[in-house]
Image (cartoon, rainbow, N blue to C red; front, side, top):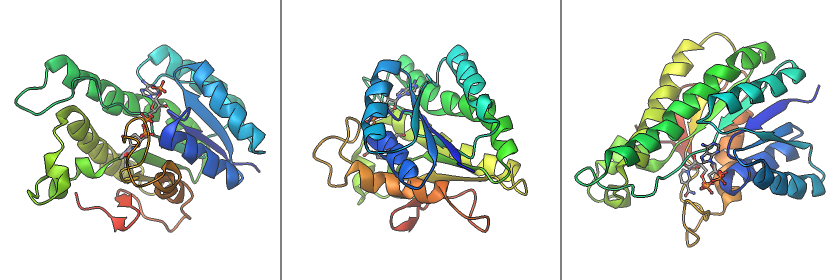
Length: 239
Ligand SMILES: NC(=O)c1ccc[n+]([C@@H]2O[C@H](COP(=O)([O-])OP(=O)(O)OC[C@H]3O[C@@H](n4cnc5c(N)ncnc54)[C@H](OP(=O)(O)O)[C@@H]3O)[C@@H](O)[C@H]2O)c1
């Protein structure tokens, strides 16, 4: 039976690469994109590579869009993998001493509230899959250990909205893993490392494909796999 995976924000960057790599592993991949036309461009590219991918309009901040997406996916009867990849670094993101309230709010709206809303909405379909996997995209910029180390490059990145919202994603990951322990659903977070994308900057050393690999591993864990942790390519990340 073909397994079904949904990747949010999969029209470009790391999300598109996660979709590609899950497709290469035999999944039917639903390419979530808030702009369906941008999504269709990615879908055409992946279909041309012989992959089983389908576009799905999904704006994680729009409850109507989330409901409609659940409705469409329910035609499959289940969802085996949910990758919560969509995220923003809002325009004007800044240091604690300078950031505007609206900017801070918008980071949490997409990166945390949207992620939780999508996860809650798809949970019944994930439960129907029996052994579903949930992967949340995190970052070293959410690590208290790394940002708290004055010698670390992470301590110099002054984007409170992004860093704090992704730290909240880590807590969502731990709490959801606890809530779903024993159900067969494993929940982990992936730090792709700094990758060359619109978000990561085009001078970053890692490719989106390298960044995607961690999330794909977590999306395809066997039943004995871990739950409630955050992983980077080098292994578990310190909180
Ligand atoms: N790149 C890095 O260096 C890096 C490092 C650590 C963690 N990460 C994480 O990896 C993930 C992917 O990052 P990336 O570098 O690939 O970023 P990206 O190139 O900016 O892509 C972000 C994706 O999220 C989508 N998105 C934003 N808001 C959305 C919404 N409301 N609803 C649905 N989709 C939405 C974007 O859609 P549009 O095209 O419509 O804007 C786009 O498809 C993110 O969670 C990011 O925090 C990235």
